[in-house]
Length: 184
Image (tube, rainbow, N blue to C red; front, side, top):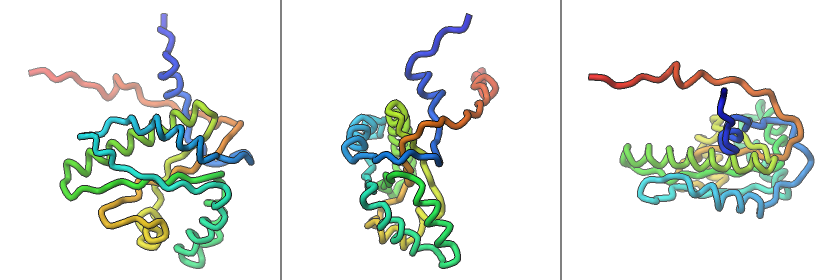
């Protein structure tokens, strides 16, 4: 007899990246802040809290998208305009970089944990999120547009929007297939 899953395990297994099909419903700043206030409880070494956030609301989205597409070559701008117009809002996660490799990797792990927390908490509210790390996050023009300072990295754009159709899930490889036990 299979043991029933906890609510958390169920949420982890059911959460999907929502990439399109967003409803015409505003993602409010207050909602994002409420979710972030819980998401920041992600484990982070030395409590360095190596993150900051830039929220792009529905009210600012059109202007933001126009500024953003100008950073792309002219022949890509219309495609990128269509792509970036789909989400209802954006949350851009900025990570503090550290010149020491160990601390840099710890910081990136912490930011990844925070983003996962955000996605799970948003899912509970039927707010779809997909974490995007497209090449534009490395573009100096995009960094300038967002005010990303030296010593900071764009960890990703979180595309957000409410949804009513859940995309199909894809299975995962059983942990047992990738599991070994150390023995002398």
